[in-house]
Length: 349
Ligand code: R7I
Ligand code: MG
Ligand code: MG
Image (cartoon, rainbow, N blue to C red; front, side, top):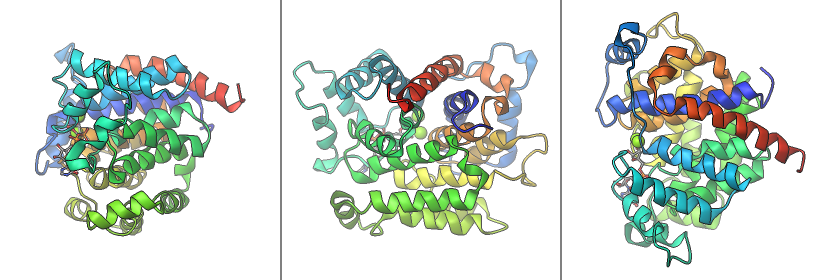
């Protein structure tokens, strides 16, 4: 398809919602047999079930805030976005938010708050959260800004409203960069795609705060870059077991243990796999495979969905799946509006 086409925007935003909604079923499960995943997914195809409804979780709730804010403000506005997060949380607190971030969202509701980044800095004894909550909502930054430096900068700032640890916000940067490259068609050359991500993240993680956080948390010098090298090693191999993916990349709630994993899911599912149904296209394979990893399934499938959706486009999204997922129609409409904003921005207007 054409780079940055409308179809890619729609695919990205809709498939992210699908990943969240269908992944909710298995969130926190230790391991999920592929058979169980396929049963769950074929349940969505069952016409006799009528109006099946899978509700979205915090991943989509916060993504919607980012989308609305970017559209309403025609760009990044930290005050507006912070207000939307707080309002969304107070309206629907039961969407499955991380246990730490709730405190931030409550503080963001205070009208006396001067610095909207401060509540995030107070988390976890002043180090900030390294959870994947910044990354799970990062895709819209790639759909609003055509230039890579803007994507990086605003994905980072947007994450810092809740995640001030570099191991949190750099996960958001990586996720947004993956969607950005996918939107350009970069997944047609998977080796170049992963090399490009490694190059970008090595620069991002060369910053002083990132190096310091990695040292304090006893991670590799450049943790995301190191994990992306592992992704490259795994994708070069013919056969990889689910257990190996989990032990090499993780399936947990930390951004470091989920964003590289989501990227791997997309890369691994570019080709047909013998343990996935033959009638599945790449997007269905990606979501099914993400769920089979267990762990933070809604978030990994949401992030993998955004990257894969930007590659395959809306035509690859099964209509029947879409009908079952709360918020999928809204995502589709908003994707068209983001497409307009992106192309307006790219003309310098
Ligand atoms: O990152 P966050 O928004 O959670 C997102 C996840 C996704 O899976 C959603 O689907 C939803 O289920 O939650 O929320 P945080 O509370 O900031 O981080 C999530 C969890 O990561 C925290 O509750 C902690 O258990 C852990 N965590 C940390 N633990 C110790 N030290 C995050 N940062 C730290 C830390 O610095
Ligand atoms: Mg969730
Ligand atoms: Mg989750």
